[in-house]
Length: 219
Length: 219
Image (cartoon, rainbow over the protein chains, first blue to last red):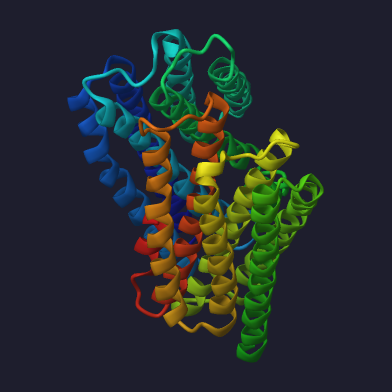
């Protein structure tokens, strides 16, 4: 019974890694589509989001099935419950990538953000992709140094997110209202993407410490 | 054993109703603070958000404890797992109320939104408060007609949310960039608040149908 349970936990982990991999591809394509006004790539991201949703649903079914059949307790129980939470966060990360792609599609053939903010969004995109790749590795290897790195990357994203507001609200800002709206929303989507990654990273990091629930709810 | 379990489920439900009640107070105060530039009321909302977070954490601990001791299966298991998801959504609704209050505080003593959008935000606020109250009733009574009503209210919110963009992007928009940023973010927070309520309502509605997981992930 114990061995079967361990195999099932391994299956859960494998599927989380797979979904994180899909999310990493989504954010890579979304930020590329966004920064290069590539509408066909944006459409790929939008179409593929359904796959992330389906994979998250299938994983939830598996986790609930494991709860019902194996009736885990203590740390094992927390691992299965945390898998449910992690899949929900990954699904939201996929949504953020989709929202970024949708902005690219709405404004095509125009660029989404004005020239003065493009370096900032290139950097936001680069960091989100980096975070998604580190998150996939973290879920696969459980190497918690990656969790720390993700938090540091997120600090950079928060600073860039604030700098977008500084720019948009500065006296030198010449953007039209549409630029202001798009920059505001796009910056928020990039920031939320990273927030979800931090929340997952904390769950993985705290799984062994018993502090897990607090981190799961507050982040 | 069965009786104890039923009592514990009743306790879970009671706590969800309590948290939903806190969220309803939060959004009522937040939208009032937002529309009337009431900074002290905004600060109440910001301070009280910690109570919602703590209540959600305590509920999660209880739910995990029930899973460990009672080892429910089938529908009972889904009820407990759904309680975990519902508490996460309620916690996010509290965050949205807090974000709306923060906008009011940042801009004080100025109003957050320009005159032309105030009726729209009054209506968005009214609908969010109405949804929060219906949600509390839905969780208490399990009267699924309320779930339908919440969806209809949310359709109105979506239409108002789009109308904010229409106004901000129209040629007659005279707002400064700060008005554009605030209106965009505030509208998104109001809309996300309602989205979370719809997601909870669907979980309550589908709990008996077996379609529960799909609705839990996608919404």
